[in-house]
View 1 (cartoon, rainbow, N blue to C red):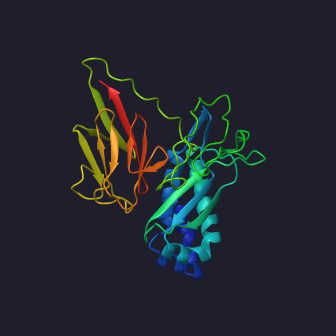
View 2: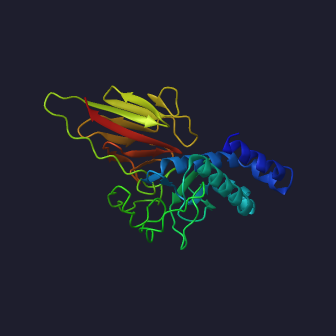
View 3: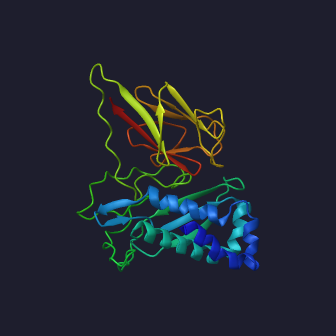
Length: 291
């Protein structure tokens, strides 16, 4: 039985009680649970062969109506969501640097039914047991400034070197997922410029699916007329456009929730191989390579 199904079953007893009011919200608890799972997957850092560290401190931003409906039950819901994250981590053999916490916050810029998830890795003063019984790695130090989405200040020797996190801009975190440096796998180095006569290939990856960019522009959005359709309520019909020029860029097309590129909330940005683009609650990885 899947972790999300077990989570739903744990809530069934509460549905028949006072907690049932929470399900009148446009945002369902199981949606948030699924987003937390994706947050762990997209921000997992491989420290060594036996240890993969994921965030342990989560903030779920909700619209004002959703927050008002959910906030009276935030304690119970937070505990249940933390338990779901713990179960999922055990299933995936993930490790935490500290206790798991899930908080709800109100975001005035979100419409009813939309939400964002931000996360960070917070090390506890004492090491926590990893899923499966192995002790977690010792706390590497205080988190770097910038809040949610940034990793601990120093990584253990076994971890591959990571570049310094860029200074945050606009809202901390991002739409759906945090800044790219926060507990995620080390960024892929930019591909070298093609040699004379070479040809640069461009593509994007969404939830493990590759979409080739064979034209000069690629429109992403929720509309069936978009070049790549993204089924996400936080994505506009024509949300943004990738242009494979020199250099390649991404342009917001007047979307409601905007775009976040490599941790920066922006309307236009230059792309590199491995750039993380966040639209709504969906993370897109931009790729390019000579060949």
